[in-house]
Image 1 (tube, protein in one colour):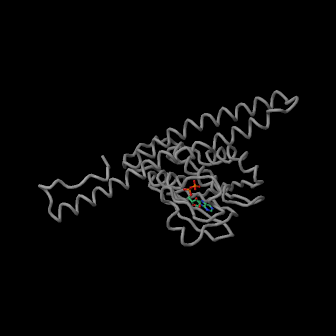
Image 2 (cartoon, protein in one colour):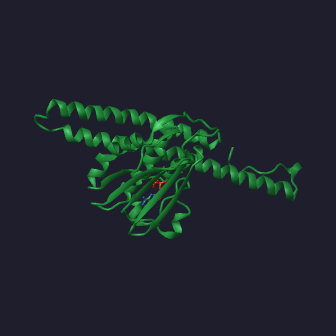
Image 3 (tube, rainbow, N blue to C red):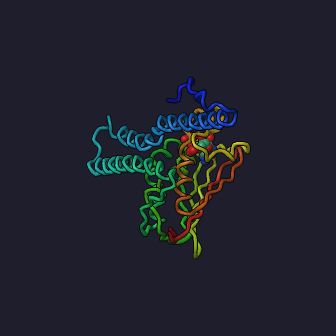
Length: 260
Ligand code: ADP
């Protein structure tokens, strides 16, 4: 139905109607293109848990005499990665709902310190491959009314980027603080940074910095769009500061109490 041959029927052909029709058609085609791209690129989000599982499985395969406790521990980690894969699929479906502006949050009281600790633990195998140090600075205990799954996904995307766009032996520092109204999470890295002209675009779906170095790194440009949607759904805000060849800091502010 988006065929090139579509045109305004003769009996309606006035300049105004033809113009409006063509504009609409262009809009529909653009939406259709980005939907197709979205569907084909979603697989990126599903690859991170697989990467962790592979690292865990590889470190057991071909090893002689692995102690049973270690084996069990790794198997548990693999199981939690499988759970995560499931969560991500659910979250991607949620992103589609977020786009329809339908608030679909599953709000509970969540210990944010624990949430971040779990995330860093989960991402450790990936960071270790590049010898990137993951640091958590929890300045105070924080309990907040949030959707734990959606926020985990948001922070996980930010931390994963900190690892991905980093150099060997670099660091990613996550810090948590709060006042009486909001909690604040910053994710800072010692990585390659973002060129000034790209900063305005990085939250757009599918946008990736067009430099050979970052193009070589796997990704589709969905991670930050997902992160921002999740944060905005919580009535929060996200900002970025970055300098090429020095590093990037994302700072997030989220209300402690969820307001409908
Ligand atoms: P992806 O990482 O899948 O490409 P994202 O939406 O997460 O997609 O990020 C969009 C783009 O922003 C990335 O392609 C990368 O060029 C840039 N970017 C994001 N985070 C960082 C970071 N921490 N350091 C440097 N560049 C980054």
